[in-house]
Length: 396
Image (cartoon, rainbow, N blue to C red; front, side, top):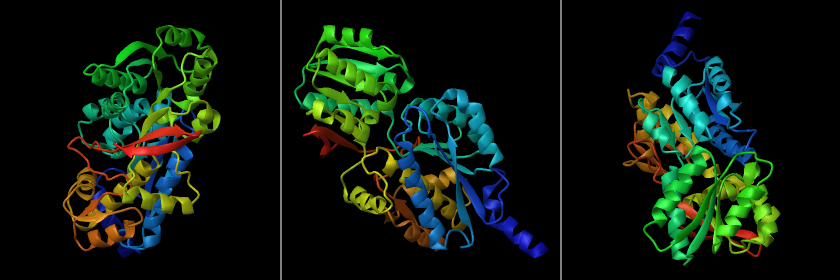
């Protein structure tokens, strides 16, 4: 019995003082907004993470082959008031790594809270504020999506390429909306595109008639909406359509999903926007895999969430079999070149190579490559509503 206990202690010594681990079980937190402003997309995101975890558990070669990864879903509600409760849950469940969070404010609270105190790395698939990288003094924060300054730049370039000359802008009065609006405007300042007005939208406001009146009075060839469809986006589009002021909409990533298409698709043809992703062989392979698990491929961030989970799994393997680094350094090593390329559905292949002491370069569904801050360089899909449906126009 004593020998068995000592073997378990040896097996998990690479975890350092991060947590006390139950034998044969390693716990990862899927820490997302299961309720709140992005609740319609989170189930598919979580299912993508669990798909990667299932691959590792089925491989029978993760660590010694006897260990299993346990995932715990933690609902952040995308609400900063939940920071204390979320940090408590992370502590109580001995979580050693985090997939999430989804929204910037709660991500900051976790990063500066439990993650920082316990040296727990976190990989967000969707929190885009650049502030998170600036706050990350211990190199614990990574993201498989790109920071919002990049989103705004790409969306502005699409507007310019389409020859649109005058735009009214509405944006959610949060870090997400304000940063996207600021970088969008900054990029357009170097072009001949005029911003006729820029209107902040208070979250969960019942009546948006005043904001819509301001947008309508300023006018433009199109109106940009930088918010979430569940929170203010649906009300805003409906109010703008009722006013008759605009027919063309420029949509941020959190406005592009099945709900928008179903509710407004036939009413806003030729409207467009971007989501993180690519139309490369990688993502097409990923879509084939997730469709077998009945995961909705129209939802944003599913590839990014799968990649976040896969990277954590491979980093744990790298740390055990090759490196004496901390887990954050292992995350960088398995995600960047050099090494054998690892694609969606190839987690077992990556685990085998790492077990042999080989280097890998996980590209995954979204062509992951981290910069020195742990931010993904990223690619985007330009999507346009054609005959009532979102269609991919091109990769950016």
